[in-house]
Length: 202
Image (tube, rainbow, N blue to C red):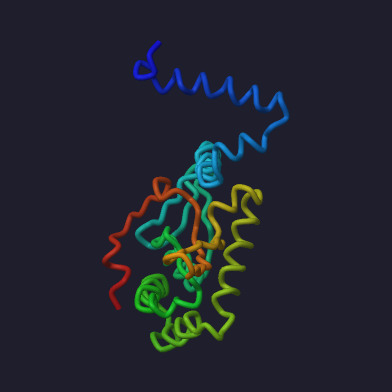
């Protein structure tokens, strides 16, 4: 069979055989090196899809785990606002740059806490985006606890706000790192009943 005649299924069969041979030879190190860490992470996400639930955000901002018996993830308005902000930015956000997202966060908080005093909401948001205040860490920690009370650690890792470091190289000498926080779940599994435009207007 010519290489150009091989189907993806043929390649997968070949790959399975090669993987088996490397594992049998005790060379998982070579297997990892050939796959690469970034691809491995993508494979982990793909494998997890079968055990992850779709995440439904309703018009009234309830957060529902559709495939886990429609269980609601119960959060206070401020925790929902933080969660919705990070859900809307799969690329991740650095805590120290949260002030750049102040208006968006304020919009989410105003939408999820319609009966609260506006000045109280503004003050709370200003605390969240203040890099010298620990408020954002406390909120993320609470969100993590909520998900861990509903599912195992492995599954929760895809729903909580967690961190990863992204390396940047400019030229040959300048290297810097972004310490981003994001929610790992594939946005293909996120269902929004509301219009994004309505949440960011204040």
